[in-house]
Length: 114
Image (cartoon, rainbow, N blue to C red; front, top):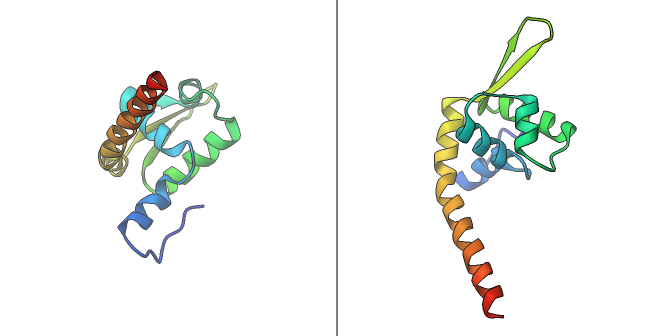
C-alpha cells in the first residue's frame, strides 16, 4: 500500500507513487495504448507476473492514477485507463524517459568503442 506522508520533499512524494519496477511502465503502456484490459496490459509488459500487475494496479487505483471500470457482464470485463492525475504524472516522467533514452545511447556507444 502506498504511503500518504509525511514527505520530506516533492521527489519523495512523487517516488512514493511510482516505486516498483512496473508502475512507470504501466503508466507508459496506458498512455501509449489508451484503455486496456488486464490481459492486454500483461502482454504489453513481458516479464510482469499476474500477482505483481494486480498489486500495482490496485495501488495505482488507490493513488488516483488509474481508473478501473468493471462491466457487469458474462464473462466479466474490466478495463483500466489513466486518470487526469495519471496523465499529469506521465507528463512529469517524460523528461526522465528522455534522460533514460540518452543513457541507452551512451551505453551502446561505449560498447561499440570498447
